[in-house]
Image (cartoon, rainbow, N blue to C red; front, side):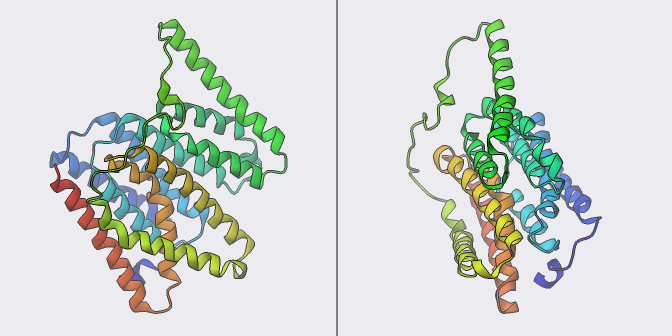
Length: 301
């Protein structure tokens, strides 16, 4: 199966995966798997669909089917149909941000920071735990921009426009109280009483750790473009991981935020394993762990 998924994907691959994903979402509704609400489901589906196009934009996996397949499996495992509207919007906005920041058109990417700021502000207003995404974008500007001050001003100006519009609307409808959830770390962090079924994902976490250690072990052997793109994925993953650690609790649909970067990291790890049987075994371990997580999560309700 690994050899089949290692083949280069073509122009028809992304629509095919999106079609398969649509059938999966439709099946969840027909089976009454959960009380699925229409608007968050449509927003989540759109965000996930945009994620398929990001693999070609980031171009870290030789345009193979493997990351597309892993991404689909991760989405099916983590999505249970109960995602709230704020998280759904965050998932969509994250995909749009990545499409902008990974654009091959330098002029388009560099002239879009005001739009990026507006997107970040809107996402924060509808889902305050998304604030680490703003930190990710700031680090991205510092690390890649030749005109840091100007681009930071554009980013801030776009955010201010959305925030002032929001406060103006809230004032007009007499919503004048301050919500403490807009302050980072304002929610009390509580340790989970039970890590079941999260510990089923331990083999996948170990694969990620191995992939990171292998990456830094061979860091100097990689091309500058590959190092930059992989660092981009890692910083994005860290931003999403902060949201998950401090705000997830038992809402496991937060793990959808890591579906894209983890698919890239694990697919690269599998591709660079020295033996074919290791690649095949690693792929099936991922599939079975996610299937077991899905079944265990469903059995709890």
